[in-house]
Length: 278
Image (cartoon, rainbow, N blue to C red; front, top):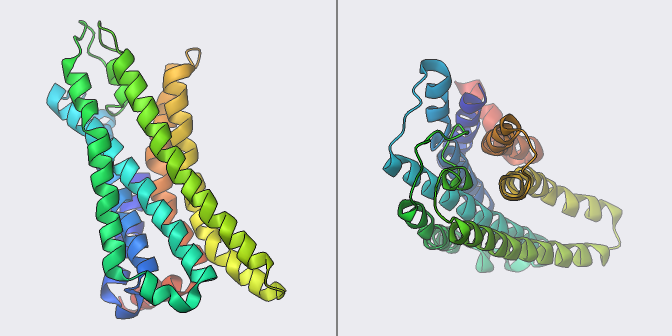
């Protein structure tokens, strides 16, 4: 049910923004990019998980497993880059509203999206290579509904230090840098807002950031919890690790379109009009 809700919500955002010319602006283009990554994140894992639960189709080839690992992590890095761009978009909208159209255009946002995608591909390309070089034991059963990098690596009879260190360092360096940039953007936003004397202006400025902050919490928090428990918490029950991994894949893609629909009046009104016409 969560997967179908994810598809419905994100495809609704794509449809409404694509159909309405007035919504084809940088902020809504970023929402569409986020929706695409949410669809890709869910679709790269959940259909296979449903096949496991419904039809007991447990098998997957080594190549398919490594490919799933690569795509899942690439999508996560791309999504993080989109969230950074969203923070910059909010900074420009609040701190430099008169120059918004010149600083951020649809073309520039598209270029930034492709840069984020290329960054994710380059950072994650070594992961399936490291996994393919590992010798694997007789037990090829992954205690997950998808091919999570560390869950696959732990099946190996060899030394997984390189794989573990690389994935940990890259994840925390890249996402740490992204979080620093987001924090910098919001620090500048808060400084600019506090200089405004009007309380109504304060509320309006912070309301424009609420949706983005909620999306960041639903994206980064489960991701960090999943990554840390996989590497450092040995006492946690296997089923708890599986639940955390699936929460990361389910909650964020399902909630993101709901959050933006609830917090963005213009988008909410357009969705309502499209629904009424149908």
